[in-house]
Structure formats: structure tokens, C-alpha cells
Image (cartoon, rainbow over all chains, first blue to last red; front, side):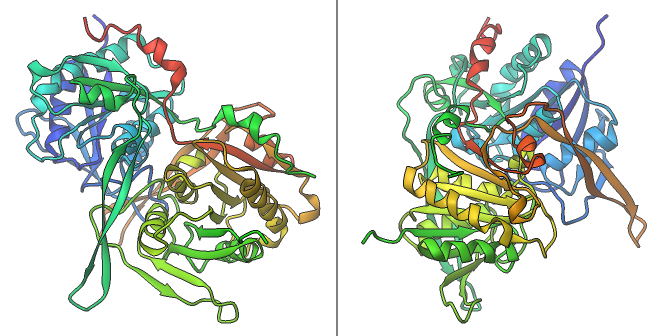
Length: 259
Length: 259
């Protein structure tokens, strides 16, 4: 019998979020699960790491029926992966899965995403990794609808291995299970947020801001994650952490920088 | 006479750091400067944005001799760029420069870097942008040695325009001005941090960690930023924010995801 894979589960909404509970349910069907996740929500944390402050990490038990190793960590999603691999496990898991995020991490959201930063951190350490997100910000989002696809994608990654230097960014449309048409391999759409700051005055009379904004997709391509999600598909984007714009090197070599 | 460019200056070490003061000195020679920077150090913040908390932003005066517009912001480097463009300036600057960081942002450090997240945020908004970092973590680092190159690179970017979808990651070796050999256009080296957690016990008896580690360069290429820096050159890497690993799409399409 083949050995059950060791699966590291983390997220950015915090260890008690319904999204990570759904992800743990699926992973328990696939392998041996260890959970190391933030003790509080870390949305919008990007690839933050804790360098100027201390980190706490404590074992906790959440499901009494189904006891498993869970650690609650005071740091960011990237910290959780570093701690899991280097202190808690002292070895690399076979795969790291992050999420399921309450809300989209498609398109440009990947750069702000704590969910994806955990996957990228694992990828940098040479661990196959997948970030899962559901395009529904509600705490009561229906994660049951996507469990089948989470399982398919994770098992495929374990079976096929991950392309070198790549992690997967998977987003699910907010649909009933029967209405999801399938999984599409996509590129990141060229979209961005147009910020709108909500300016207010605090009780002491000092002005402050809330960051708000609207998402604008400038990309008409039918091979993008935004297109897939808008058309009822699960989007799967291979994400790299070599950020070099190789195509621009030739152009930049024409600049007279050393004259 | 040609109009002086409008230059947005930010950083991640905080508005009072010597590195941003050196950058402002150089930019005052080139154009009209506005500074919007964090009120406290934000190292390791990656591309964090402030979504679950309020943002404060206040005009301040630091140089009484050379009064200019400076704003101190309670948020992250990416927040500073968003606030500058959408609330303070209400228009796009001609260029955004970030730094000069006290410490390296070469190679994989780019993904953890607040300095570079500000540049990337500007890039996403369609603004030419450059992050500058000096490979010296000291608060008393010698920024005078690199001012000439900061000026050359910024003026070249203004003159040539930035390749589409690209921002620049510039790192300076810790050398005297006369010992810097020139500027090299490079790719990001394939390097990573091997974490070492320093485990301690607090006065209340609870265990906690400090994140430490050592940087390991696995890349023998002579076209990398690490090679350039180790050999006395300024490294200049074009960085993209389309994170799609386009080369992996074909491979992933062979996975049986919809069977």
C-alpha cells in the first residue's frame, strides 16, 4: 500500500475560519494532515513575514471527534509555513494547501493575498503548493460545492508533481456544485483595483481613511482567470516566484547606464 | 524649457530613515518631489495592504531649510502609494521611487520586500517605478556612494520610459563610490533563505520564536543580481507583476482535471 502523503494546511482567514475547516475535511480523505494557521485574520497581508516582532505558536484542539495536529500561530501565513517546515515538522510535507479563502484571489489579487503568500513560501522551499479561494466573502459561504474540485486538483498535483518553480492559484466561482462547468488552466487577467478612500473623522476630530475600491478588468482575453470564473469554471493559474521580466532585459540593455 | 517631472518618493524603513533622506536629496535635483511614507518601519511587510483597519496620513515638515510636501502614513508602503495617487495628488506622478532601503532586496528578497511592494503597487497603477536598496543594514550606511547611480537610473527611466508591465529592482553593493564598477541589467538569482528559529521563553514561561536564517544562493549564473553585487556592480532587475508561469500552462493542460 502506498504511503499516505503528509499534507500541511494553512490559510489567511485564521485557524477557526469555515474555509480552512472545509479544506481540512477534504485533506483528511487524502492523507495525514497537519494544520499550522494564523490565530487571527490576515487578509491583505501579501507576503509579509514577522521580522521585528516575536512569534508564538501553540498546539490547539478544535475538532474533538477527529483529533489532529493543529497549531495556532501569531504570525502571517508565510510565517506559518516557515514555522511548520522548520520547527514543527522538521521536514518537508508532500504538499502544502492554503485556504479555502473567503473571497477571490484571482488576477492582480494574487499579489495582495495572504492565502497565496503561504503557497508561494512553500514553493520557494521546494514544496508543491496550492492556494484555494472561493469568490464569496461571506463567513457562511458554501464550501461544500467546491470540495470535489479541491480533491481532484490536490490529487492531480500529488500524482503529476508540480512544474518547477511554480505554485497553483485556484479560484472557485460562487455557484452551486451542479452549475460549475469544470476546471480551466488560465493566465492571470490584466485587471486592477481602482481605489476609493472613504475619508472620515474620528471622535477626537482627526481625519482617517478606509481603503475601498472597485475591481476593473481591462483584459478581454478568454484564456484568463476572470473569464473562466465569469463563465462558470474553476480557474487554475500557475504562479511563479521568479519575478524577472525576462522579455524586458534586452530593452533595458539599450539604456545608456554606464556611459 | 521642459516641465520638471513630478516624483513620488516612498520607502519601507519609515519617513525618518536616512535612506529615504538620501533618495529625496537626489530627486530634488531631478524634479518636484512629494513624499508619502510610513510613519514607522515596515520591513518584511511584502505586499501587505490595510483592509481591516483605519489609515492615518498627516502632512509633516522634516527639513526646515528645504520645505517640501511630506506625508507620514500609518499604513504599509503599498498603502502609501495608493493614498498618494488617489487622495493626496489626485493624479499620477511621472515616476515613483522607493527606498533607499537599508538592506538587500536582491533575489528572492523581492517577494518579502516592502520597498519593492511600493514600486509594484505604482507599476500596477501604470506609473513608472523603481525600488532602490543598499546591501547594508546599518542605519549609518553610506548612501552618498550610490547617489550618482540613483540619479542615472532615474533619469534613464524618465527618458526611455518603462517597459510595459515592468518595474525596476535596483540593489547597490556595500562599497565606496570609486569601487563600484557600473550598472548591470540582471535576472533574479535562484536563491532562498534557510530559516533558523531562535526559540526562547518569555518572563511568563511561554515559548516564543524569533525568525532568523541564512541566505543561500543556489544559482551559479553570471547573469544574476547576486553575481553582479558580489562582483562590485549595481544590479538592475526588471520585475513583473503578471505572475503567470506561462511556460507551465501547456504542462498543466495534460493533467486530467475534468475527466
